[in-house]
Image 1 (cartoon, one colour):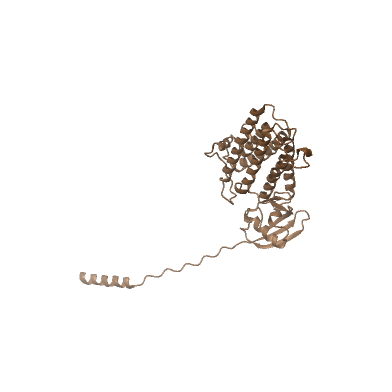
Image 2: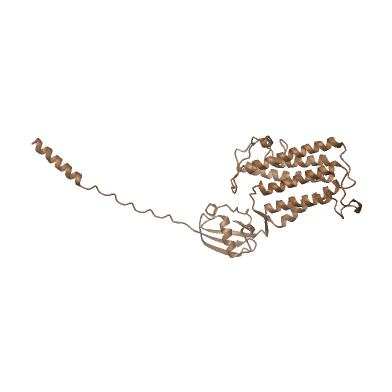
Length: 342
């Protein structure tokens, strides 16, 4: 009986093994996510007139994408010339802001204003720097119609005049080269009208100081060569420091990146001032012009230094507030432009 029972079990087992295993049911295909498109209307900021209605705008579209679509309908208003905002009294939207992250519904209204003809910041910087460089050299070589005819194309007998020309030229040549090869300008363009204001300030200031420094009746500094040397050392030290800060800021972010980071000191000793100020590039720039003022003992140079200090302080304070607003862990010891003072 046991043998028969074992044989029966083995037969049942073999039959069970021969039975095919059931195939798994195919999974139902996933339903594609439904994309909710936006409807964007663009209104004139002043008249509130509807300029354009954009249908089926993707939620991942950026403000720059919307500007590009608007540009297709209005070719004269290229993206850099457009200002878009959600409310007539609100700030302009940044190009990188995404539509679906804005506080709008599926129907969004943008208010458009024309910023006017635009120039790249690099072009403006170059114009600001090349003008003073050329104008100063015109006075240095005493071209006709500047001074009395008997001084045309003559040379000053004072060594400090030649030294001042070399320092002034070095400063602006350095700025031109930095604009071309060092600076990574985050802002794309600026209004064309600003170039007249900016260039007028730099060009007129350069001509004013150059007229007196290169004048045939120019008098040398009161304390002689010691004062000239002191001013020269301050000037050169701050020029190297300013260049070091620009290199450090350039290395802070990759080309094309708009991610902001906190600048910190590097191995370069000239960058250690970052422990104390937020904008040491302005600190060194101020120091350069103080050194140039000491070296030349010229009132127009001193006036230009004071005005530049006021303007750079405004810029530095704005940058400092921006750092404090964006970074909670921003070093509290830092001042804007002058350590422990301002």
